[in-house]
Image (tube, rainbow, N blue to C red; front, top):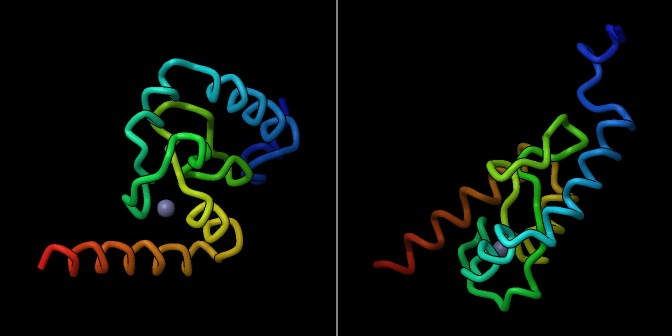
Length: 106
Ligand SMILES: [Zn+2]
């Protein structure tokens, strides 16, 4: 038993395994249905299904898994924001998106 697993959020093996599962997930009917809605999970904008990428809500590198609950369709813009922003900045970005979409409703 590797006790390091309790302290290290994600090791290389986990990342590799979950990335592999994500590849399978992209081919699944479930994923095609998700993309069929053509909405970005984060900014709620409409895209064509091929513009959407599979995003892990909890990133694999932080211990997130490739499960249906953790995989969402995400546009390239949000995807790259998520990659480059710190978690706290990403939260602010999401809050801003929510605020913007509320403004649209007014
Ligand atoms: Zn988006």
